[in-house]
Image 1 (tube, rainbow, N blue to C red):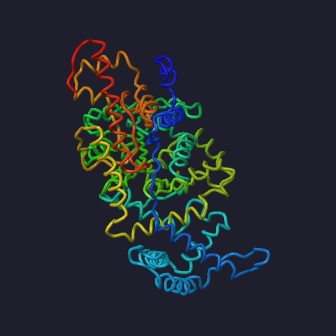
Image 2: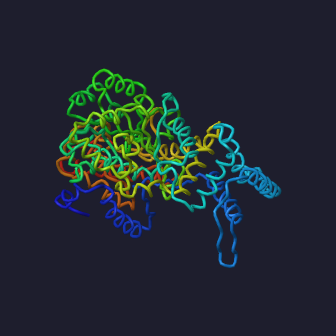
Length: 551
């Protein structure tokens, strides 16, 4: 166990770097005590969405039959490219045969046969969006084969339409804005963050020395990236407090009145707070922007929105000001697929601000993009993001891989066909049960309310100690124990890995727990272990002071 000086040397590290040391300690601690190693530090879910995947792998089989139509050398293992004409008719015959074969031995308890899912998804898309059947089938078959560069390079035609409709449910279910967004499918939320920081810098929308605001607590890269020499941004924190259920108050927004604050970055629902913005908080921010800061740029990262029924993103309320980021990773259990999307409204302040740059800046941007078009000033912000993601010179090979876009298409279609939201309810139920197990293990009461996504949680020992044993104990603990003692003691004594909340700009004496990646019963053990740590601090206080505390 590190001492206080060693803890201080670790305090500036990302929690995702500290976790490696915690994992070593936890594994050793679990072996020593014959206990179970429990890593609730990372949010990779331990469930997957099966129906869209079943359709995907079946579609690949059909695509291969299509490819062999144009050329086939089975000895060499060579085929051609899937043809377009007649693709839909061939698909309907093929999928009808597959459906008959599967349903002959199918048990209703096994769910929906993959062939029916795929066939229904294709018919649903054609009927709902009015697609040309052959064109849509060809996009699916040629893309799943992956034999072409992405065309268009920003988003496949049909995939963008389907994904747009899915996002209106996932991010704007309670408040669809009635505007059109341009989408850029990217390699997960990670790529979205990297591309957006780069694009905002390259368009001179954020320059070195500029100030941005972060609604904290927040996912660690949003804290770390602005400080890189690549960007050199000044950061202020707009702190949402646990006492306010992690909602932005009127006083929180005061800091944004300064026009020097160019942008506000949000994670909604929060990571690690797990709290989505409620209607009052959204109303406050919307009123503030409309009346005081119509020039404020907003980036909202809404990865966990699908874990809150009828989730409302700020994207739907302030579309002109907002860049939306969404990742499929957590909801569909597909972190390895790297599926995400950037959304920018066609009518937006980003294009307006680029057009308003002074002549010398316009000249620099003209030079940057002159190889792409004779009229570089007509390139929209969303397409500049695409170009910058490939350092402009490789713009002609940009775009998310085609099989990834097909997987995105199928995830979206299957979710849209689920009118009763059976899948969403099942995912939420998993997280809620684990949260309740943790609370039971802690031996406390908790009612986080309807805007809590139950994907992560913040256990704040300072808050807990103050509530249950009093301020004297809190003062003594803060004077004599380092906050990193909590995750390190959990690892060494209990074989449990949780990340330090301070790394997320959460309270110093907190830890973040993921409810996504361990079996249900593990969270009872985690709750009991945290309670044991708290009791140990109280006992140390009593031994040091001679005072008795009822716990």
